[in-house]
Length: 319
Image (cartoon, rainbow, N blue to C red; front, side):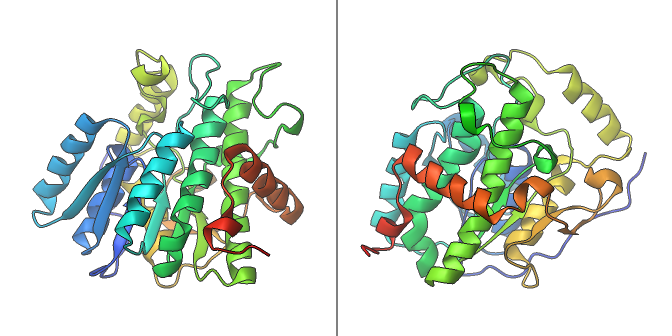
């Protein structure tokens, strides 16, 4: 089924530095391509260097003069996150756009990160939390906009405060939802704290709807040797233009949130079609689990404690 072309305008980003996590395939690769085409230097932190090199080759087919920089990053390792932060801070170059896009979803069994956290919480939320903390001086220097990618899974559910790491009883989808709720609450709290403490950055949220990305595809690195039945159905619906988006259109809300001069801080952007599963990107009502200021502050404090990353120390606030 043919689709009506859907796109947004990405303004000139000449002279800007942008960082996109998860830029080696899927939505992240599409975002990195668009940012490079708009003139930004794009930093691409990747876990798999071979995939990273392939992504660079792909981008340069479309944007021959793209300015790209591959870096090593495993969001499931706080040491890896800290190492990237050290490297980029040593370079001392401001970051103007940060899209926190990478994630994992539904490992076939409960797994832990290198630091002992449940894999989805540790990768989707805590790894990104630590990354923003380590990069905070560069984000401040760039007056950056930080866009954090959540999910329709954050529409319902809650933080499992009594068992954050799901060690007593594991529900993989509730754990995934928790990771995205925590991440969304963090992104909104980042905006509040930046505004209150004069950090000079803005923060908002995006979600891609539903599209045939690699989240549910074969992922040998998390023990999934073949595609799930769900991703096969999602691909079929997407290919036939039924309700869902494509990997390209699913990345548009994040691009809008991160680059549109009219995009607002503290706001969620996502597809505007039925059920917000696909369609043109637009501002959307915050999901109910993301609305509590008290819960957001609790997530922030928990995240600083678990990661050992202090935002106050990052900005030199010793008060």
